[in-house]
Length: 92
Image (cartoon, rainbow, N blue to C red; front, side):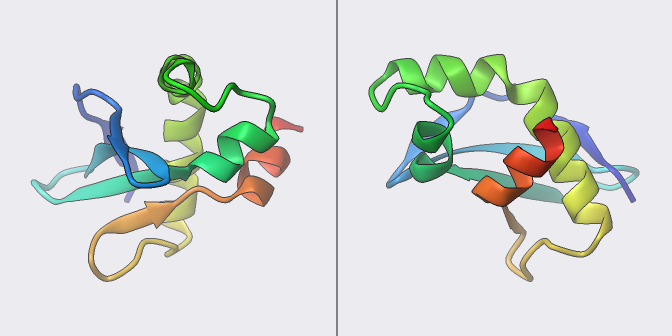
């Protein structure tokens, strides 16, 4: 089942940014988490501008999250972590 975009802001959390996505055909949501280390390793600034960069790349991050969800990588508590190797592989 793919994930669908939810119109919600990217939220700042401790050491990461996160945004929700909805499981297609249900009311269940998954929290997509992008750790700061992923963003800063990609060269995105480590301050408030980081949120702007995450928002700018959100469509790509959503596609990646949906792919990872389809492969069963969401945790039982509804979280899906985007790791650096995911982003590097997806960007190739």
